[in-house]
Length: 267
Image 1 (cartoon, rainbow, N blue to C red):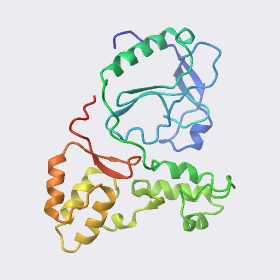
Image 2 (cartoon, rainbow, N blue to C red):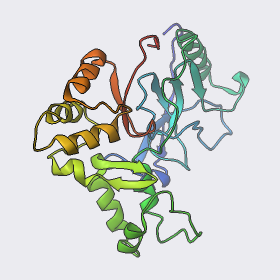
Image 3 (cartoon, one colour):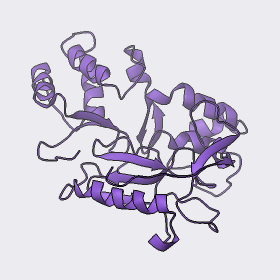
């Protein structure tokens, strides 16, 4: 980095919201943080939730934010194509010296993405969304609040049992996808897959397109999880070979395997 960043590390109680939202493993009682703003600001800044931010190949979380109202790992500073997302509202004079240097470094860093445009625009919510919505099924009474998240069957099955719904979501996390509401893809599970977003799943589905026994279901799933509608195994194979190395999966992009445009550039 052009300027040295020497933050003073402090310990703070882990916010209660970090335990309410989905999080990896067990969280400690204390979290190490450092100040962006000088004394006087009590609430941490977060410009964006972390859910799905790692989907696009041209986005990256630079610094996680400490926030008492959002989830563990929510973004404090990040980049999406040529956009720098700085989640702190203080002026430079209100920043610590370490934060001032970090801000300058971020400006220099984002200049390397000048002219780049985001390759993904949000079409769906990330699969983490139904996990933390599940905690609320007995708390939120607003009519229609869950209509775009859970089917009526799920709501009836888990009424009064939010922990059971959360467990079901976590147990099937890699098979979740959104189509009006969230679903667990039992069709892709029936073929022996444990994830709908791994590259090996895409490769095997293309191979299965040539198998008499699984051809129809493989075709249905390839159409579901890509933006393509090829009719033959050979066409699927040519598409994959032509774009190998540039294919990625995005929840927020519609639960699809997408292709980075050749002229997208980026870091």
